[in-house]
Image 1 (cartoon, helix red, strand yellow):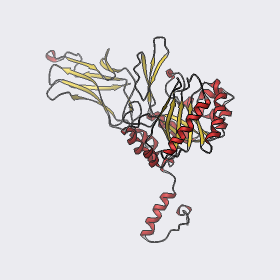
Image 2: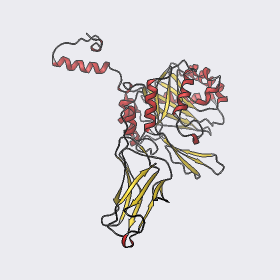
Image 3: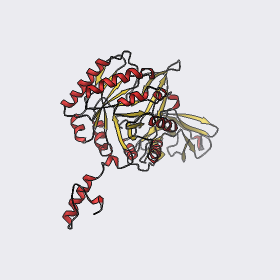
Image 4: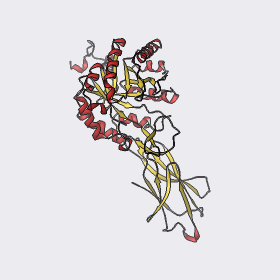
Length: 423
C-alpha cells in the first residue's frame, strides 16, 4: 500500500463506505491547512478591544493561520500596565497554539525586572484560569542596543520562573551590530525578527532588499527556530515644526497636528516578497508572522479578503476604475468615484485627469463646468487641463468605492467627459 494510504494502522479496503471513512482519515493525517502553503503563517492580534469586527476576522481567517500571537498586556513608557481581556472562548475554539504576547515600551524610563516578572506570572495564571493554555510567553521589547545585556539577564531569570512554558522574543535589525545579540537569542526558545517600520519613516514602511539582508545576517546569529514579522498595514507619520516625529498613527487615530505622510505596505509587494522567500528561505526560518490581523474597524490594515488571498498565494488582481455617478437624479452635479472590483487592495492613483469633449472649461453656448476634489484629492491645473491630485497615499480596499471629487456643468445634459488615471 502506498505510504499516503497508511495512517494509524488503517488499511484500504473495498466498498464505498470504506472509501469515505478512509477519506476522513486521510484528512486527519494531512498537514494543517495553515501549513500547506509553503512557510507556516502566524498573525499578531494586536487590538486592545475585542470588537465584533475582530471576532469576525479571527473566525474567518482561522483556517489559514498556524498560531495566534495575542496581545495580552502592554507596559507603557510611564511604567503603567494595560492588560487586555481577550475572548477566551473564541480563542480556545480556534484549536490553534496561542502565544501570549506582552509589549514593553522601548522608551520605558525604569526597567524594574522583578516587578515586571511578577506581573507576567500573574498574567499567565489569569489566562490559565480562563481556560487558555498558552504555548509560549512572547516578549516584545524594542530596547536600545546598549541595554541588551540587561534584557538578556531579565530573560534568563524569567525563563526559569515560567518553565516549562516556552519563552520567545521579538528582535530588531539594529541589534545585529551587537556582539551581545547571540547571548540573548540563546536564552529564548524561539524569536521573531521584525523587518518593518524599524528605521527612519522617510525610508518607508518596508524595503524588500534591506529585509533580505537583515534576515541573512540574523540566520547566522541564532541556532534556534525563528520567524520573520511582515507588515499587512499602513501608518500615518506626523512630523512637528522641528522636523522630528511627533506621532505614528496606525490602528488608532491620534489627534496630532503637523506635516503628515502615509506609509503603506502594498499587498502585491508583500506577496512577491513571500514568493521569493519561500523559494530560498534563510537557515532556521520557521515561518512568517503577519502584523497585524486585519479587521473592518482598522482602516489602515489591508482588507481581510486581500490578506487571506495573500495567505493562500492566490494571484492578486487590482480592479481600479473611475466613473461619473449622478449625485441626484435629474441634477447636473456628478460625483467622481473610484471603484475597486479586484481581489487586491489597490494603491490610490496619484492623478486622475478630467477631460471634456471640448478644449475649454466653457463649452458651447457658454456651458461651464466646475469641479473639485474631496477625500484626499485636490483639483489642480497644468498645460493639459484639470486633474485631481492625490494628497495622501493610501489603499482602496478590494470591493470598495470612494468618492474623490465632484463635477457640475450648467447644462444638465453635460458634454462627454473622459476620466483618465495616471501615475
